[in-house]
Length: 290
Ligand SMILES: Cc1cc2nc3c(=O)[nH]c(=O)nc-3n(C[C@H](O)[C@H](O)[C@H](O)COP(=O)(O)OP(=O)(O)OC[C@H]3O[C@@H](n4cnc5c(N)ncnc54)[C@H](O)[C@@H]3O)c2cc1C
Image 1 (cartoon, protein in one colour):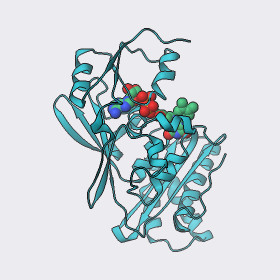
Image 2 (spheres, rainbow, N blue to C red):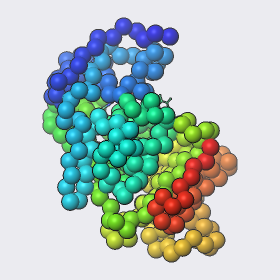
Image 3 (spheres, rainbow, N blue to C red):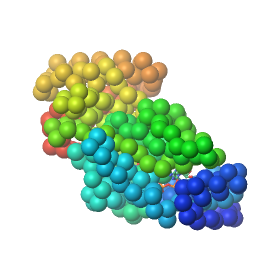
Image 4 (tube, helix red, strand yellow):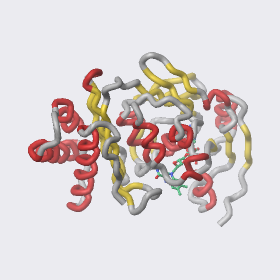
């Protein structure tokens, strides 16, 4: 199918993009176009105007400070994958980017586009929650900070106002050099959207431990009890596995995340595998199920 006719506008600046959205209700931002263009072709998203933000210089910026790195929204997955931007999470972001779809998608798809779309089965939504990131949004009334834990409200729904707000950057806290992480996806084949994703980040030096379950057509969940156990864990043992399995079940119940027994099994295993990777030392045994 071909899309409905749309008006195309190339924004020169963030303010220009916001003003255009305000002037034309129903306008949508166009970043890498990897999700939006297929949706337009299928006519499942009514759009009157496209506001192209790819050429806005400030959205390509990387700003480093001692505590965090701020990534501009228009940076592509490929730039993370290639190490063209520094990795605040000791390799986690690079690893995540390299597993997104296929290289052709990664060349054009952007971190800001993926987060704004908030498709539950996509990678950045889970990975940035694991990283403890903060979204920087800008609208007609100025800019605001939204912690990742409050950003995705449900699949395809975020805290952004889609009528007039732009995700301009994502700020990721730096981890220490001794930080360990794990990241595991379950999908039909490499390059496909995942049915479950899990991220674990354990930075004892910074007193940070996070475990996240994504996918399952729901907003990603922070697993607090599971993260608490991981913070204190030594090596991988059967006892730890049993303790973690119980904690994951309790965290999911707390988050009212119910599913068929096979789904619960798959979610639990996804988190356990990410946890095991983290405890084995970052990226030592990275594998993903397909
Ligand atoms: C075949 C295929 C397989 C894929 N597999 C995966 C996968 O395995 N994992 C994964 O994570 N992703 C996957 N994706 C999605 C891919 O990562 C997209 O790049 C991403 O979801 C959207 O980014 P984009 O820059 O292309 O955004 P666009 O398609 O341009 O925009 C997506 C939406 O976000 C809005 N938007 C874009 N930028 C902003 C902004 N800065 N502020 C506010 N709103 C904005 C747009 O208005 C639109 O509604 C896949 C895509 C394809 C086509």
